[in-house]
Image 1 (cartoon, helix red, strand yellow):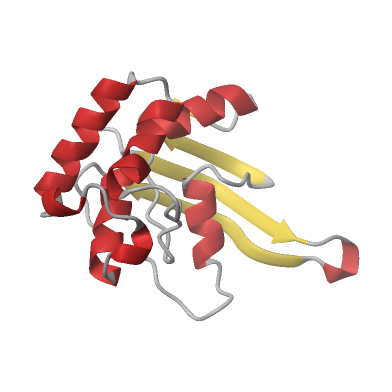
Image 2 (spheres, helix red, strand yellow):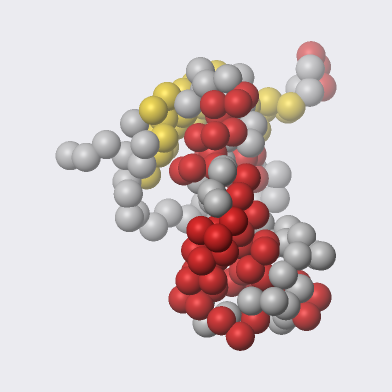
Amino acid sequence: MTQPIIKLEHISKSYGHGDGAVTVLQDLSLSIQQGEFTCIWGASGSGKSTLLNLMGLLDRPEQGRIIIKNEAVLGLNDNRLADFRSRHLGFIFQSFNLVPVLSAQENTMLPLQIRGEADNTARRKARDLLAELGLERHLHKRPDEMSGGQRQRVAIARA
């Protein structure tokens, strides 16, 4: 059996302190294999966003371990964690979070540039990704010049 792409072991997360503390996740364990399709659903306030923030390394649990690509990531310092996140994780936000003054191509290039890709390489990769998603005619459009579906595909390419 292969190692899971992501594994959470005995994760607990609370918000607040003392009597006002709210436990959102308690002793949660989860494994997801590469290529596996996983859905997370539940009532409002049940911890879905907290779980996704933990899996995306945007937040840290009070207890437990997170292993991504066979690496225990919670022991990484902030710089190594940011580097790991930029190389191995992609985010597609519900509201897309595209930079309004940047074109589709520039929005897609942004994480590549942040992790040190040369501009010409980032530009080519962004153009190719956007073309795969049917956006080759929209490379130079800003988010406010695109439909919701087009903005969503730019967010997917950026991720």
